[in-house]
Image 1: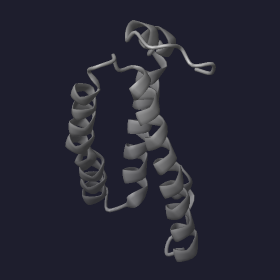
Image 2: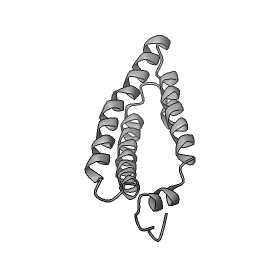
Image 3: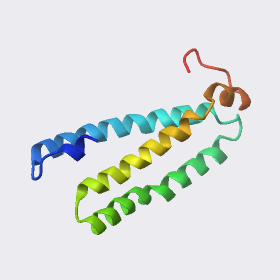
Image 4: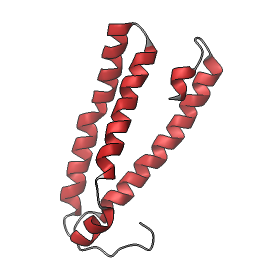
Length: 115
């Protein structure tokens, strides 16, 4: 959302925001893999992580495509940024419905001390 409010042609704030986003996205990727590993039944790790990897690669182009299309249609980056924010909000709403504790138990894994 901060990118929405960046002034035009502000190179240094743009680069700083890019670095910050890169750091945050790297950490969130590591956390998602860690959480996913707890939801995977024992002896089926290869199957589940292959599916995870295929979905990650299969959908990684979707955000870039949406961003590019919205930018082309509106000739502005601001609505394109809003389009990406919609993806994050929808993902948040979907993940709120996941009962992580029950998923870990259903997978036959031991609950960690902090979930």
